Length: 452
Image 1 (cartoon, rainbow, N blue to C red):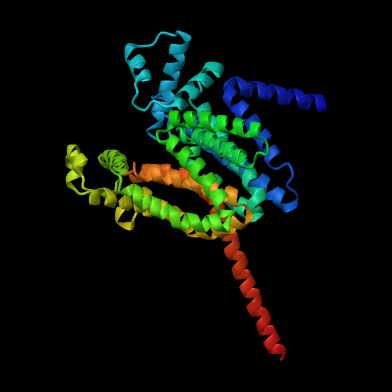
Image 2: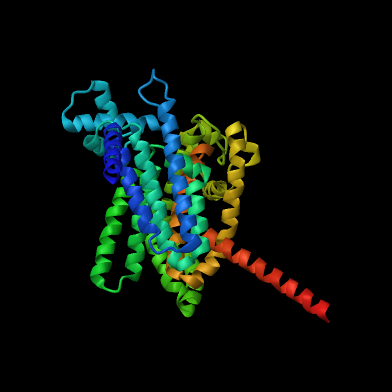
């Protein structure tokens, strides 16, 4: 009987592998990573962990299967988002070029066009060189990559921040609608998230490694991953630089009260002095003006946008280099503010954004809990807290200055959540514990007064 079941399982696995090799390989990866991530969990925590991860995987596979089953037969393949057409067509063209398969001149030109070029395209091309055409298997690959990155973060954070914060962060990252939607796409965000987690692990290894040879390896890993991340998304080198340098410096400073006091006095003075230097002013202006161009470009693209520049700059981009210092400061301030609060009620002009409003409230709640999480995180693990916060600040700076389309902002804003959601979870756990403590004290006081 056992042999029959084994043979049946082998046949089914063979059929599944023939239909979609990438799906079978990704499912094997997910099973292995899930077992590893939950290896030392016990009792109800383990049950909840396995249930949550299983549900997250099943829902993603079901959505991808629905995309495949209900695809329009008149088109080569279906997509969740319009941008996905690039990440489905170009990898096949790049693969064919690499294998020497003839393609049309137009496809050759589009395949190598610098517009929209990303390292993720080459990853998808290499995968399809190994397993064959996989326009829907690529969705499964991205889903597996994203879930793996979340589980790696969960294992990284849980020992320091505890079970409630880790479980809360796991739930948000696996099921928040915006993150869920792009985790099943073939866009570059899931693979970017995985590389970003590896980079975070290297930074923590640099801070904690007891031997210099381990620190050297960690530095090499940071450099290689920074280059890889930059090939996927422009601005990643700045994010890695801020996350590494500022994170490690802050971690060292907060551990030493005297050094922290000195930094609180010296850093503002140095910043004020630097702002008076022409070179610094020129560099800030160039970054801000480049960001303003990106912002204006997003505003004129299809979809709902928000405006933070003087109206004349949206019709005359050539006048942007003439922006005054006051306009530059206003642009930076408004861009950072818009990052946190958009979409505003005045921007809600479609059913899609009305449907997004509940998640917007969740986003604002998560932001409100971060300060509480920072406070308790600095007590539990100042190194991890500072590094997470510094990376989040890098993401916020890069995304905020280059956004203008609400939909794109929501998608890119999710890149900061893998860093901040654990602080939100820790803050939420601390607030709940404090409320419970006060409630217990009030009840106990009432009982004592009644006994008297």
